[in-house]
Image 1: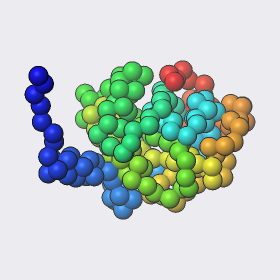
Image 2: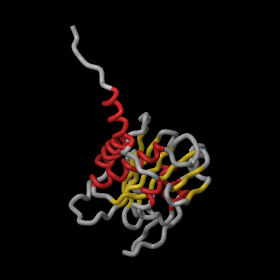
Image 3: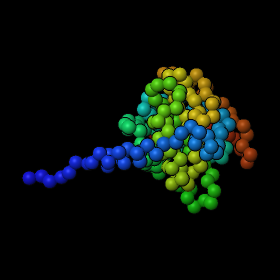
Image 4: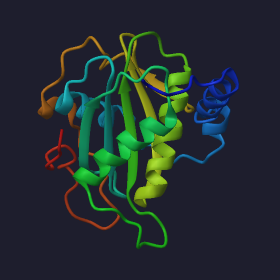
Length: 204
């Protein structure tokens, strides 16, 4: 004989209500003071060339203060319905795998950005809001600055909350070779060569 119980409708409502709070609206994201990327197309093109994402692929990348890529990882997520807590755990797992945390620093130095390739158009969705919540929380737990959230669709790419975007690359475009997708960034303030943005080792 098996004993058990069925969850009550009140419990189900409570669970769904909790999940609904684990997302950020565009206005909340814009008000959070997310640092702007100096050259978002360079970042997007480089990550697109390196990881060749398809719909439902998330790419989390860590940039240094000069916007050079230090680590990146891509993974597929088909979580439905969207849950920021689950996204946070997935992002944190990838960050822990590819780069040491900066929790001992008083102020975060490195920045994590997230590029998510998905179906649909560039308009904000609840899934985007859940990824935003997850990115912000994962950055806090790993000692990083929370950076841009970028969507990649068949229409092109867009930095949500900033209004910046472009038609290429897109979810349907062929990745550019590294040589053409990478343009030299402005010279770093500390001197040295900064043309190795996308030649650094990065985990998929």
